[in-house]
Image (cartoon, rainbow, N blue to C red):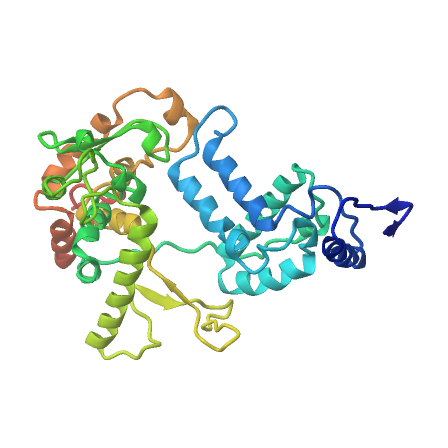
Length: 398
């Protein structure tokens, strides 16, 4: 078959059915202005995306640093539409810009951050395919992500937090409860092993490979948090499992299982119960679910007229914890140090080898300000309307 510019394609040693099938396929490519080459037609988009994911999982970053489990989960999530979605079964050369735009713009209009991330994943998968010799519609790389506002973090009050946790299964409640006062990332909590906990000193040790800051850190705990860890570590564990927090079967938690089967279900249950308890309608907002809004502040609706919702994320427990620390009287520096954000600048992260915990006096502050736990301290302080100094902690100025 002639494709123009002197390009001819031939195939030999084929059955009649195979030849007819190939002719139809080549005619479709010719109609789209493409020339087939060996390997390009056979590489499907799902194979390119899966190959990229495999590379992310098995090879380190430049400089030899391993990718964190959180990073791998992110790549799995944003590559999912290209492994399982409607375009996944197309050969890479047949993926056209118009098809991508028809998928991307409605997706990004409803879920801006997710849609943009998934577009980034597609471009990465196509570049991976190019490296395997596949032809790619280069105009896809010119599709610009849609601008959007960064999602603001949400924080619950003590009462709202307690209400939410009542609607989460008992097995999932323990790590979520722990994150809600310590400000630990959920990945740090789920990867916490019993040998990282010092029950006498009321601390946990999180080594550099297990945290985002990539530096060893020791976190001071309240007596309430230590008791929670002790109770969790005494629950039945499967043989060989050292994790503090485990499932009902004694296995280490998988993040997606916790989020989808327990957190998302708990958020929906808490929202429905909140509406029922407060006489609200099914389209009314709650502390756990709220409307997405346009630039004029009006609720967004999808193409079917249904309201677009946002909801509380597990990571919002980090904001909740920081708010409680500040309400309980901890200074900004103490709260920042406790969650691992004391100073992200290079001078502290690389050169400072001193004991910042000792400098901040955080262990003493926790004992003095929250001897019965952060929830009690925050509630009492707010009830008394106790003012704070300019750093947000310590004694009120006269």
